[in-house]
Amino acid sequence: MTDSKFITKLMPSKSDEALSLGAEYLRKGEVVAIPTETVYGLAGNAMSEGAVAKIYEAKGRPSDNPLIVHISSLQMWEQLVEKITDDARLLAEKFWPGPLTIILPKSERVPMKTTGGLDTVAVRMPSHKDTLRLIELSDIPIAAPSANLSGLPSPTSAEHCMRDLEGKIPLILDGGECDVGIESTIISLCNDTPILLRPGKITAEQLGAVLKKPVKISEAVLNPLKKGEKAFSPGMKYKHYSPKAKVILVRGSLEGFKNRFNNSPKGTYALVFKGEEEEFSQRAAAYGFEHDADSQSKNIFSLLRRMDDLGAELVLVRCPHEDEALGVYNRLLRAAAFDVEEV
Ligand code: AMP
Ligand code: MG
Image 1 (cartoon, protein in one colour):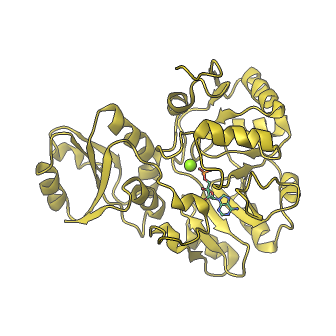
Image 2 (image 1 turned 90 degrees about the horizontal axis):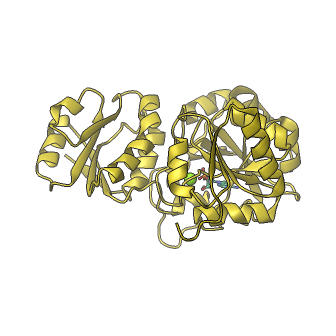
């Protein structure tokens, strides 16, 4: 690699030595890839404009796309927001540490660079125990978008991070494969009605049950932005999660899917539900059980990456049920640039 700035070290996140080194880098304003239960994150000091600039640079991410700030204690949260509202506290008590990001009006202390110019800040407490320790050790809130090159499928293993970021960052902490496999659910509590901006493992129903009021699902979850429309959640406006291959979501029966597959060119691969892969001679992999969002989430990003390794030109994906697996459906819609076929 010609533009290498670093010889990237790969160390197990459970080692004390790795965590101290990680904390030292974070305190010095460098960026480090870290495991979380959702996907791997590219971590830097959220309170330092210089560190945040390095995150955007390493990812090749547009700088109006705000970052999620990761914390290890409620005291850290207090410093980041104007006020922790009752609703916010209720959700944090129930779901933290865990895959839920809460957006509130930000305090003056959070740099605009971290929030992509917004006056609100997205915060979460991750549950991966090594990463919680890392945040405690460094004693700073950590901005951490997914540790992939912008636009590619999110990384769910240290190896994925290495592929995307080798030479660009000094350290990758290997904490094994991510449990959840898709990014956190994002809820905005900045207005009277709570709004779900990004679906994830924690559902709108679960959130509504704790808040004892309905949670509105943002239109951007299922629809592309119209021309000139302002994104509530700026990340929604970018092409996302895509392998090099073209991806098409195919909705309908297995029979219909098989017909579509059999009439497709040679470089076509199929991502199907568990048990169905045997019905295809080759060039098919299962990404999860049909009615089990958790199993689908865990595998979907690594399989999208694998499609590129196999040289796929077209990937046909059995469409997940959006009422059962909204998070997976949302990611696949973007990977497919909203190309959905009915069979
Ligand atoms: P990633 O870091 O890759 O998981 O993406 C984080 C996403 O969180 C961004 O793309 C935004 O869509 C969303 N986000 C972060 N902060 C805010 C905020 N203050 N308001 C709305 N959306 C946000
Ligand atoms: Mg991302």
